[in-house]
Amino acid sequence: DVKVTQSSRYLVKRTGEKVFLECVQDMDHENMFWYRQDPGLGLRLIYFSYDVKMKEKGDIPEGYSVSREKKERFSLILESASTNQTSMYLCASSTALSTDTQYFGPGTRLTVL
Amino acid sequence: RKEVEQDPGPFNVPEGATVAFNCTYSNSASQSFFWYRQDCRKEPKLLMSVYSSGNEDGRFTAQLNRASQYISLLIRDSKLSDSATYLCVVNTLSGGYQKVTFGIGTKLQVIP
Image 1 (cartoon, rainbow over the protein chains, first blue to last red):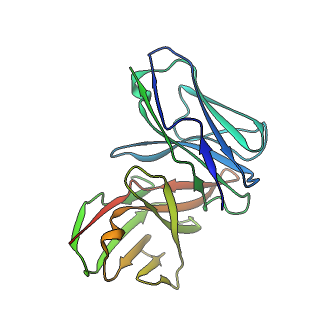
Image 2 (tube, helix red, strand yellow):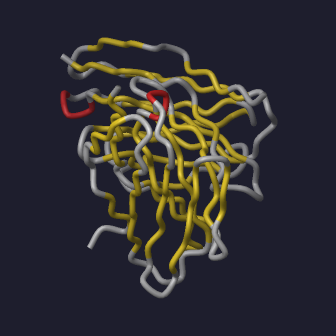
Image 3 (spheres, one colour):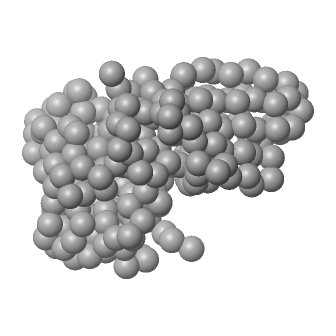
């Protein structure tokens, strides 16, 4: 069974703090993704990575950065958290050939005060 | 126009009913299509793929209509456990990458 884990289920941070969200997958998947999910807006892609040290912007990258130093780990960084970044953050992974079959982690509910 | 559009619902149906959801997509070059299921406060999980010839898995049937650019999901004999949000997913080749776009989801509530 594919397992995608995220470092925290719930996180509360203050405006201006630097926030790190970690994601680890154990199936040697090439592709990893970060989404945020908000009511009425659905899942929106922030960044994705098709290989180690490789990253591509998704639809809403502003205010975020990512890091992929190892194949199994994909980190999302909020350089200076703002209240409009309060959201559910979901990490996903997939094989190179099946980008559309994505396995999701349980999500991190981030609240920025 | 949104790339992938779904009626957010909720669809409230009694147990045993048949319910159908549609999802439209804007890019005629989109290549593959899927339905994901997301339970309340859980992550999305792949439910089934969608083919032009139709795809059936037990009580669930998915269909693709390329001419009208929509996909559908039919659930027969609804169970309480079918209550969830169903996400339509479209895969399009864009800029050399496969771009996967999720719809906002249709919420289904099956009532006893």
